[in-house]
Length: 448
Image 1: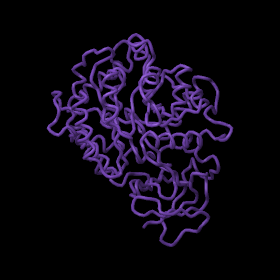
Image 2: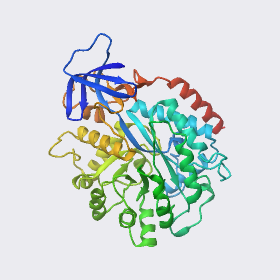
Image 3: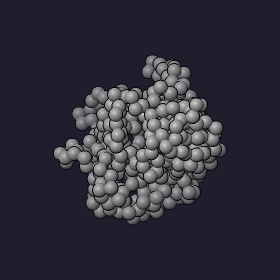
Image 4: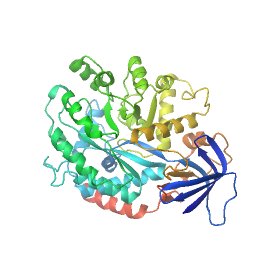
């Protein structure tokens, strides 16, 4: 049993003062409020529940910042994808483990305590399955265990190069599956997971999966999460209209059993009908504002989606910059820039933009990754501590989350526990040096 004492803590019914959280192994055993710290308690500032990162491609952390040169006359997502394909072509499972561990350590430092790994690098460099079909899944599990982050593993099904049965490109050979060998991959991945991990599936997108294949693989999810890229770029929307007469989110809502298990990643380009129907489905919109800005994808209509009662989580996607507060800030700022107004993502019950963003992302993210979240007895001890002496947070009251999201540079988070294990102390991952040394060694040989 360990005892953590906080000056304040964000509990399910709001902020409480002088909070003592007792942790038994990985779980919150008790929570006491309005109490003095015990002599053996570990004392901290403000406790928040850890956030869930709903969408990550861990290996892409290794190419962060390397695609910021114009690749062709009209540089966009599709030209960035060509750079990404060239980078992944040389990765071994050991490389994936080293790069992903670095990404996961940075996620913990940023306040994410669980990650949804949208994992599609299944095959060897020649396109053939490894002898162990879950070889690279095992590398991701190893990265999660090294860093301590919680893992929701989402093996990706990818079978065609574009709508209407277009053949895959050579750059996609490491992703490809058919329904039979994907089923074997899912079961082999399940066998590698630690007890507190969650397994779902991820049909990559309507570009990469036929309707028949989608129907065939959905039972493999069981009660687990189902994630899919949808409507990230206008070219995808236009191609889907040509193929089916419907937009991607519209097609999914018409033809797939979209419900609360589903996370539609990006959903950037949706019309009013799709907004209302997606919100009513109970599915989560998986938003990645930093990556969506970096790739020039567009702006998700978050104001309208909130008004419709929609649920969202945030993810780091390409991991070009891992920053939980930055994802939330980017979501609000994109709405301000497109509408030329301020404080847009609020409602009558919650006038604080930061509080709305954090709480909505915490709840939606947990739903999307198939876990229970929040500082409550019986929940996992996934706890983030803000340093109340940080210059941006000193003297904060009800505006604490606003200050963290909109005004604090890195360093405002001083400690993180995941499943009761302290992973971050004094603002740094406890194994940051060893993880970074392995990462640097890996990048040295990859970039040689």
